[in-house]
Length: 430
View 1 (cartoon, rainbow, N blue to C red):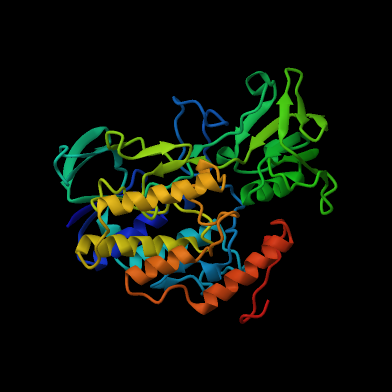
View 2: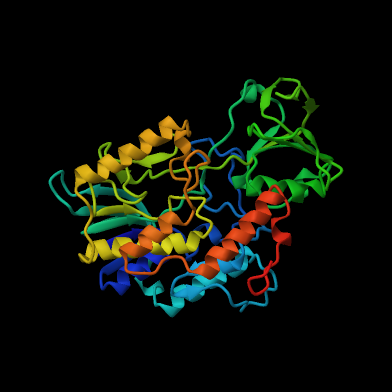
């Protein structure tokens, strides 16, 4: 089959490799001049630091200069290309973004993927040829010149770390200080001597908070988690943990629900990203509603358009992201080759609806649809990967990877996510 792959980041490269291995004709569209997607560091930031102006010039990358991975290298890499070896002079268990990009370039070179990629070519429209057709037209733009090409299938691998999600609280629009999203954070120097409120409780919020605390006057973290203990953090004299923001006012005050207030200079939203596919035209068959992309069978196939339209890389909280992406790509390639068959449209839709019903029953917010871990639904992070592996004839996640993940996750939980990179692993004994 002739297959279009949208994007040449981790998902796009893994998908191109899987499709090529199954002898499909593959064309990868990449709007930038190089591979790597979110792993390409760009010092440029957007004109709107909060990232909500629809007319801003969008910067794709969200990396900050000092970023290292928040999972150890033993849990990275693909089935056919592990990330164990330290080939680039690195000594850290947690690779820098430069090393990850080197790894991806090596992967693309080793498996001759670069020759499949059309660089500096932006996809502006993906749409079925007509309502009765299984074929797709991909309209792309290169140097302002547009072209259309017909494909038997399209795999969307465009990532989901570009369009910011921002917090919403009373007074936000009239607050006089600076607000920005972590998407536009690069280095800590602009925070020198500032009082900063950081919204969020994830890895980026904690990473960036620690970094800016070295130059900022104060850093106040705000989390909506009900388990947050309001206190000064014991490992930094100028960092405090607070509950959710109650409101902000025109005088620059930030009031927290715990009763505390602070006159702040900057509010930094470390609040995640939106799934966004502006080029995809499905007539409402596939929608994005509060970060639920759907309906999607196994987070990949829209039942009504399967198997000729699919998505790679949407789920999160897998613990082994590259491996998950690799398995998704392999399954799609097997489906398109006819080696595996999908259930009927009705069966796929029924399973998706049952998943949604279970989320509603357990009061899990819609925006967590693509999380592989829900505290109210007992399941392993790796169950999804094991299922995908079984579909493509692989044994699943190996015992060494399982053990490393278990040890690292235990360490992260015990330390509240603050000292992740102090973790060490030595021949299976932590």
